Amino acid sequence: MHDERELGIIRRQLNRLGVQIVPWGDGPPTTEADVVLLDADLFPIEQVPALPIDPTTPIIALVGIETPSRLKWLLDLKPASFLIKPIRSAGLYSALVMAFGIAQQRTEAIERIKHLEFRVKSRRLVIAAILYLMEHRKLTEAAAFALIRRTAMQRRTTIEELSAEIVASGGQVPLAIHPS
Amino acid sequence: MSKSSIPIGLLFSQSGPYQMMGGEMLKSARMAIDEVNADNQFDFELVPHLRDPAGVVSAYHTACEHLIREVGVDHIVGCYTSASRKQVLPIIERTDRLLWHPARYEGFECSDNIIYVGAAPNHAVVPLIRYMLDHLARDVFCVGSNYVWTWETNRVTRELVSAVGGSILAERLIDLGELNVEHIVQEIVSRRPPVVLNTLVGESSYIFMRALHAATLKARFTTTVLSCSLCEPELKIIGGNAAAGCITSSAYFESIDLLENRAFVSRWKDRHGIDSSPSVDGQSTYVSIMLLARAIKRAGSTSVNDVRSAAANHCYQSPQGPIWVDPDNNHCFLTPRLARSTKNEQFDIFWEAEAPQKPDPYLSGLDAAPLVRPHSTSTSPPPQQQRLRLLN
Image (cartoon, rainbow over all chains, first blue to last red; front, side, top):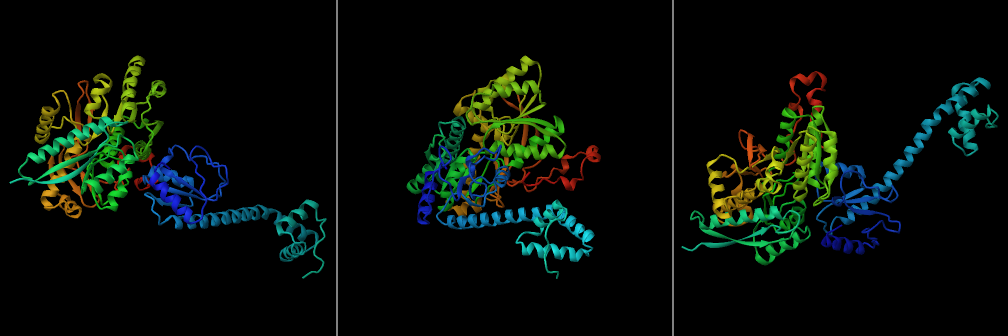
């Protein structure tokens, strides 16, 4: 940020909130930051800057110029929250709470998507395992699936991992002892 | 009967990267103030208080605060760049004063405490690119100073050219005040674009225009340069031959053939010399002061509320033709024009809107569909799919 007046407001308010400030003037801060405040007006818009921070670290953008070209750039930056300049003492706290909340929700959503993608990818293996058991143990589809699920539970593994094992070992996997 | 005195603030940089504009605007402001003060239809006289932030962005706030808190002005005329306007906007709003902003800008702002007297984007860039698409080419090479005016002008250009299947051949941006333009000139010579959109400001632009002229002469090819900001004093700085042939979009040219303008130019030359020319931003500064004085007279006070209401919809026959403030958005109805610069450092106007156009700072009325001419509809998506999207 260039503006000493606005910097002063931000410093005072962050100090009141017990937030430690690491200025990012000449280069990236050496310490790991939990949140990044970034003056969007200072960056050229040809490309989103490569920020040397963890992609899950929330960014709060300070926005002065509201032209579509700048807002498009801002969207690509994926800020977790923003503040309209001029900065006032009010608003910073809400922006911080929003930013941490949004960052948390994003992290959870990313984890959930990863999990679902794994399950989607593994569906072929689960189907293959069910077909294997139907053929070799003369089970119905429902019974084959129930057997896999029960075994997975007993072995504290997932249906997907067990299915992969069944398929890979050609059925040489000890399955649940008690039929349902 | 002696006139009462009304202090007004003038905020113009007299040095720094756009000092030439600041100087032209100050000259015009002083001329307008002298005319108001000598005119018996006004029972007050304007007392100017100049502050010179010297082109330093952060100095604008201090200068503005001083004008408001120490001098006690209700009205300030000034700023040139958007960066400087954004600096003073908070204090202007907080103290409920009125800033009269003469310069054209890229739009996407609308404060109750600013009267935007210069051209809005629908007045400036849109007619220019429409003309290009209709008469010159669908592909354009963009060169500009790396800041918000260029970014936004290029964005609108991209919207319009893509709607008809054209393209931006290149977008070359250099820092404000950068004087090394040779690599861009070389690229233009080797790629030979039909049109070059120039959004460089100040010295960068003058050097570029001269270098491009020399290089195209040598390479024996021609390209058309487009501009939304070139003005007569700049043509003189660049030099007639290098500056000639540039298609420029503006609300004001010295060559406007109106009674009010001929009289204005004549008074200007009496004051500043027969060889000098008023500029678009200078004329707009003159108009700002005239609009302000007329609004104070109608309101019978300098109160921001009263003056703003008095200015709304009140038509003033200015050098650039009829102009009035649109109370919907505090920008001005004005007449867009297109002209070609000539070797004798003037502009030859070849198009103007039939009537003053409503300002559209958010380009909410911009629709690329009419750009698609009938013969091209077979290969283009239907018009409703070509409505401009805000964020493309």
